Image (cartoon, rainbow, N blue to C red):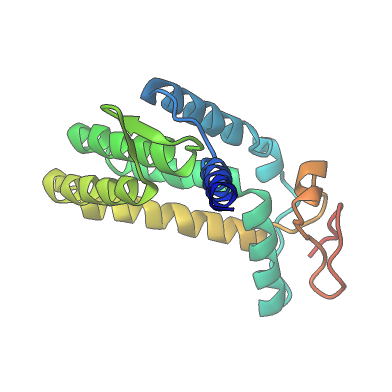
Length: 206
């Protein structure tokens, strides 16, 4: 009975260990390579730029509700395009300070590659770094970069300009001709008119 109980406990312990171990650590180079692949894949899903600035599609919204609906729809539909625009505005605001531009570009790349688009455990010097430690490290590096660059407010101004530009575009562009792809439909993205029920697929003009 004692041997049976011990065997059962051993099997349970082994099963528990196997269940909680979810991924095999890979080299830091491979982690960055896969993160870069995820990043480039995400960027490649941006909407065609002519669709963003197509003439004849800009009208003033009829009401505040319509404006908010346009904001919601466009920030989901053009989210990659808007992210690129805001990033470029931030970069342009730092052109007068090349050192700050390089520093913030490096920090931004770190956030993208080892936090937002990383899927695998990060291993440094043979030790696996937890996500919390990665986040703390990035925050510390960002704070040090902000205080050492002396161009923080220029960056903030550029980002604010980019966000406002995207906001005005989202409000003034009507939703005529927007269409969700199969991947977005599968993920549960809903787009529809401001007055009618939400639905998948094509979007009526708002």
